[in-house]
Image 1 (spheres, rainbow, N blue to C red):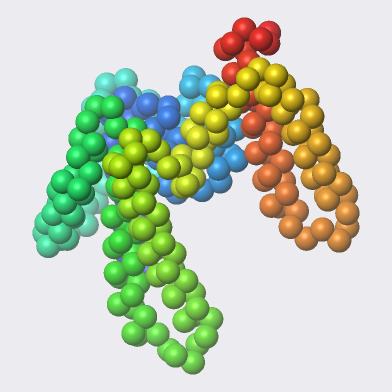
Image 2: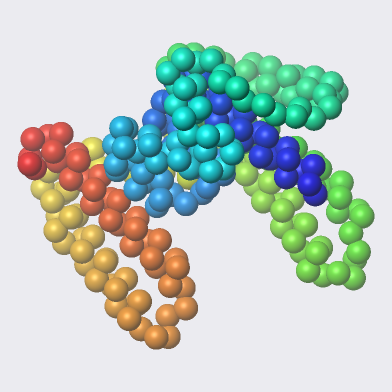
Length: 264
């Protein structure tokens, strides 16, 4: 178990360093954050802060998760050169490395757009999630044979993890394949929801946007408040998350209106 935790944390550290050394792009950072925190509403709130303030929040989150001091992450972004990162590397698994390289090459052959400069950064990060999900699926499937068949809870948990990894792998492949065929994002995974929401709202007229922030969203928020005031309501955390999502939508819409010169 500890080796799995180490591998996961070390993988996050490597991805954070790679992201920072490549320039610390804000949108790419949001996508990277979603690979280990799938709270789309929180990510929308970070995005609503704008690149300058939002990047500060992201780096704070990355520092907490990867155990890399925030000043060092900032240094990576500015110089692109690692600053005194010391880690104890696990033994090299040459078979694993060759297989990973082979799978990556196959993906680049299958999806040639991954090597282009105009490739959405979310798709490049998605490849890593897809390969990781595949490994989790294979490893988890092998461990199913060692479970105690009379321990129903352990069997269910292990089977659920294998199934989730398989579904995630297929969802990632579907996203990549859709972009290959259509030249546009499908947007079903959390990494794309904030981007897709912004694209959808940008297409709306000013009148439609005002209707949303003056009528539709306030009406929905009033309904959420009513649910929270009801003592019988059980899914309070879910409702609070949805409220945060609506608040982030208001911020996003107002920013679009400001960009259009329709709001001060």
